[in-house]
Length: 291
Image (cartoon, rainbow, N blue to C red; front, side, top):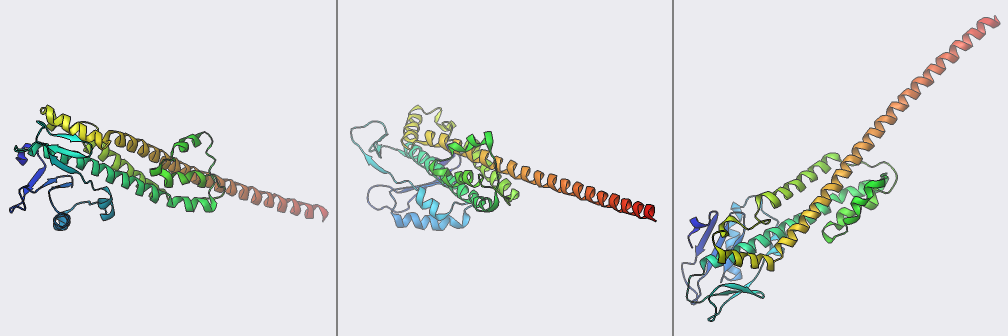
């Protein structure tokens, strides 16, 4: 496999053999690594070696949770590589390098998507920290805007949807608007990476001129349900963004209401002082009249 055919991919082959089956490691620029015929110890050693060079890496628990493990077999009666149930079927006694890359690419796409799903869940949990503040003294009469919140009961947004109940209490909420804006920025960044920087919404250009590889890639993507998961993740991102925008707008409205009450209080104070002055002048005139 020539890496320059694929762009941002590095393929490493073992310098020594263990058995007849070769061992390969495929490094993807976006951070994914696929090990072919490597032991768990070898994989962890490689991960430890590249860790100092990581940029914006995912938490270790997310990496462990979203890792994909697949088996591959050689079948003497097949002429083309394909995906069968949960195994990659390779053609024996021929170079399967491009097919291995295709399988690996789809696996990396699934793992990346899983990491972003975990990130959204973490953001939803972080956003729920506002709920506690709003439950102390929050007052939000959502009226017609409440229907936005009814679809937020999906597993990934359970924490976020807790704002619905919190916003129905009465009182004065102390909502950190800067925190809301920061969370909005993270959600927009995640949406940008999902829809613009990744190839999850369409087949990568590399496969357009490789019909067999394109079918192989599409079947593997379908196996990992990447298209459906991408669509669902986009929908959940939209719901979270709508909720945070609602919270931001609600906090701004509460601030405006407080300012209005302060203005009303100042006007009332001025009226009271003016009435007091009128009373003092009336008393003074009464004393003059009596004298």
